[in-house]
Length: 113
Length: 116
Image 1: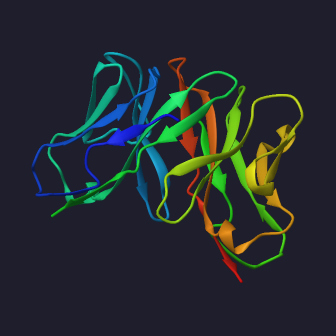
Image 2 (image 1 turned 120 degrees about the vertical axis):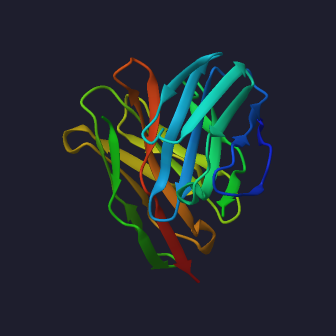
């Protein structure tokens, strides 16, 4: 089965720090996504990517950027972390076609103090 | 812009009760529709999906969903729930954004608690 690996399960950072969240998938998928999951707000799309060096803004891109230098790796960057970015961050990789579905990583719980 | 609404945020049922979770989406074009489930401590996983054809789709663990185009709805159902169905359920829509790229949008989720 597809494996989506997020580099950290728990992360604690200070306000103003630059934060990198890494995600790697092992199935050569073109499409990758970053969501944040908050109680009562569900999953909200931050950014997605359709190919190497290609990125599209999702619904809440403010305060975030992304990098896709290699097909298997999609990184989420918090340029200057703020307390309202404390959240569970989920990376997903998309299998396209008739068997379409998203494969999710286990998530990174980020706390910004 | 596409959006997904889930009407029930927290549902509590006794075992063997019937389940229906509402989902409505907002988008004028062709969509693919999904229900994902997140069991406690586990990853999100696909429950079922609709692309085209028969509007009644069946998924894993006895779940089914009906696509009603005129109502922009994709409600999830199960005739008889079990304690092991306790989880959070997310409706999702895959549709093209203004740039022509398909993006996947989720609802806020419904927490289902099944009491033995």
